[in-house]
Amino acid sequence: MISTICACLLSSQLLRVASRSIAAIGYDLESATLRLVFRKGQVDDYYEVPPVIVSQFRAAPSKGRYYSNFIKGHFNRQRIQ
Image (cartoon, rainbow, N blue to C red; front, side, top):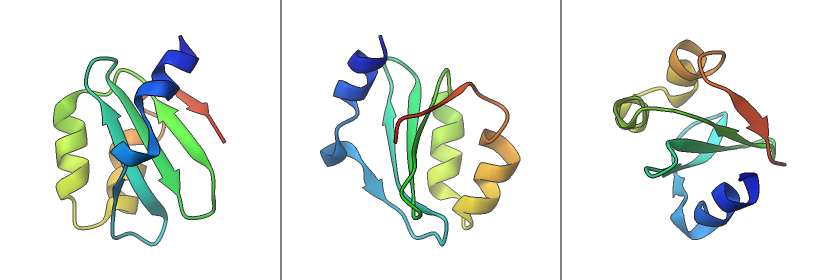
């Protein structure tokens, strides 16, 4: 299952964001998987993330603050890289 999720979250589908800690985000609606690429190089997938959270995250003026308050510790995570 993990390889299927990884395959549908290709780098071409990642959106670069203005943030000091997060470089890019990707979201697969079908699997409700949020992929975060951090500036330090790690890549994490978060599972069962509702679309409204992703929309609010993308619109947040501080991606790092939104991540800390509403994503980190709230969803199952797997380190991809």
